[in-house]
Image (tube, rainbow over the protein chains, first blue to last red):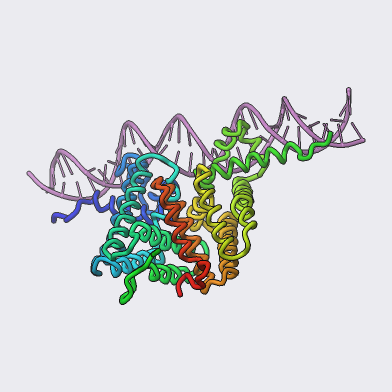
Length: 197
Length: 197
DNA sequence: GGATAAAACGAACGTTCGTGCTTTTCTATA
DNA sequence: TATAGAAAAGCACGAACGTTCGTTTTATCC
């Protein structure tokens, strides 16, 4: 019987799936090969062979996190038409995800960790965040708001802020605060304007 | 001649001053005793003796960072009357500080690092952040806004978001975005309402 | 100035980190 | 079923970590 994917590939995927969760909690530096191997019940060297270096593992983890974010947050929001509706859906999906995964937002954890460490890891994180901001800006433009860049920044800040506050205080009301604040920024049906006239 | 402060005290302060900067860049875990000692041109053991454990060093660093934040951000804003004016001053001082210190915001770096690690270090960080949110909320209440808690959350998110985006993208326009967004939230002179009617 | 205590040092510890080499085990196919 | 090649394990390494200890230097006070 021919397997649809070889053993190596599916092991690698299992590693990366766990790596994303672990890095959300411990950071990409705290993501140690020994611990990752122990959690997956395999040897350090066996796991290591899949990547060749810790940095490669980190970059692969970032790519896997980006893919998960796309599938969990962006993809479902595509059901909504471009513009305000999709922005609402993106925010909603993001906030759901923060409350679902035990480590909170992967990007919040890793971008704060690497924003001062130049190199390929930082570049990969920055690229993913830039793409997220660009998507928000694109939808803001489609929604016809006056300052799309600013709205993208505000939405980014509010959802990231909700993640940060919830992680530290455990107070779920911040999700409501973020939702209400975002609603104020979006063009209301029947009323054209918004976000900083 | 009696010195106003003993040698030990001033060495300890010099250590903590450098430790706050270093932790803003490398995190509280990346704040290693060896590196800190090297930068201050003293021995690991000599430095270590001032604290007794790494955790004590971390807690002392957090306290020093809180004191610096108070002196740099909160204290100067006391010149403004309570309410909207002071909120503007607090935001302004915060944003200045982000752009001044090379490591960016100490609290953004460390809270993301420790939000998933229970213990005294996390507790100390959480307490400092809670105090900052409480101060914002108190001033929001004094400003007579309708939802002080929400306004505090929004201001927190916007200034932290500006810090995060600036650190990662280098784009200084985010400071302007944050300023404008905050201005929209505050009661305007001549117009009573604001933040989510 | 000489006694006393504080401060700083240098070397070493046990542990954990990432990484390299060699060997064993598994797996897909002829 | 035999076998080549991939996957995983075993073992060891050098470096850096926090920490301890005994000693030496430097302040402080009578």
